[in-house]
Length: 318
Image (cartoon, rainbow, N blue to C red; front, side):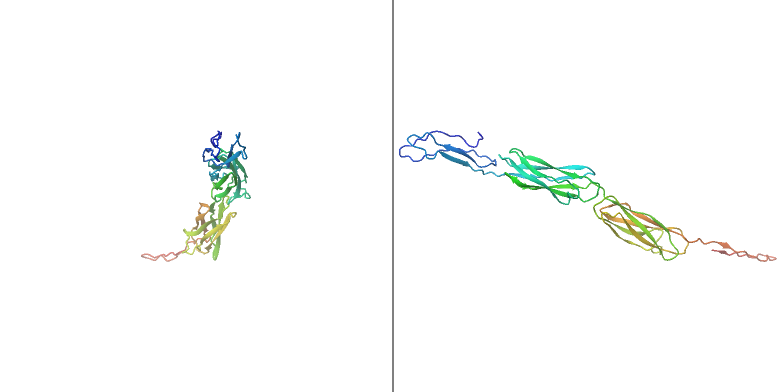
């Protein structure tokens, strides 16, 4: 009835001197993985003889490969809150007459359950003979933290009546949060009459992040110049840990007693890593604190003379 073999029946007639005869049963081939199967050729109703072994067993040996399980990869944005469903598909490939099963379990990678990146899941998938696919859902937790893409694995194991051709499905949690940004403030001070005055610029990192970040800084001449001995150049790199939000850069301004206009220089940010730059330039304003010079003119007294002209020379002094 299952088309495994073709029925046969009849009578074998042996002459007095005959000792053997053959019965042929046709077995139908297929490409279906199944257990070995059996049928019987049964002898009955012997005439002029007895039956010492009535049943001959025909064993149909399975020669087809078992079905195999595989699992796909899933990649999604993590979202800012709540959970996102990462739906993995487990596929059974190959014809089979048998039900089968496979175990599954999530395995941490750079994404971990302990860090609340995703919720663990495990269990068993049971496939009927004709079922080709089933799904596994893993819930990923959203956040607003800038971070690298993270991964976890759904691992298949302990297959029954099947093999496993691809045991690991990779779940990639794609970062969808903006990188933090760097900004620098402006600083204004009196220059002082001697020595140096510290102009302390604050570089601020804004935004949640799990990554370290860095930014380069360099002073740039404006109306104040290094060559003019107005201030001392400074440059380098600032390295921020994931939780650090501010760092400071000090520029030394040289004091003098010369009356002059207020002067400016710039502290410029560049070459950020794992962050953007929202305000690249902090202006340092050197406020003149020296008294302006003053003009005065003297008095001149002379006899006027009787003829010609007399020169009155006034001196204007700064």
